[in-house]
Length: 212
Image 1 (spheres, one colour):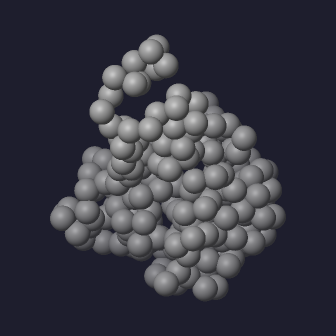
Image 2: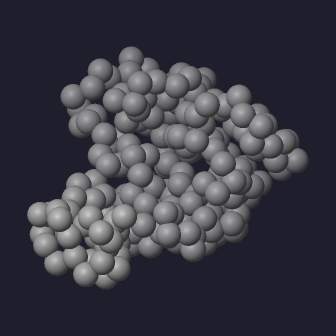
């Protein structure tokens, strides 16, 4: 269907460079192409939270805190962040996600086995337009997409830009588009997927150095 219809278009709008490149290569599409990122509304235009995320969780301002927004599934890779807390014994992790799912229960079991259950927090869901302000004050945001899946390699999801809007460094797996964006712009660290050690090293670098 795409092959039959795409050449009737006068232009192409998509969300990332790799998707644009792939479509040009796969279909010989030579007309103009534009990239529009999945950015949320500008955070400064949204109502500010009265208290910081750390304060709302009962944490002190100097307590290291990571945040995870959106769904938790095995393919999205939150396991490495949970396991990394074994090595990062002062770091807490907050999930802004629908938490009543079987897989989230599996994550809590993993946290119990890792001895870090008391450092896992859940945050009530908010309207998508205020997510950046709701997570402000965290020290990093996590994205664990498993590589070698085209949808992951080319992804530039909302949560990536929610972290950037909130001025939070991004810890992301070595997937193509997000990994190269983070490395190019110096807005976080890239780690080897499924490696809790690599994830912990990336988190520690951000905690030590922050971002510009």
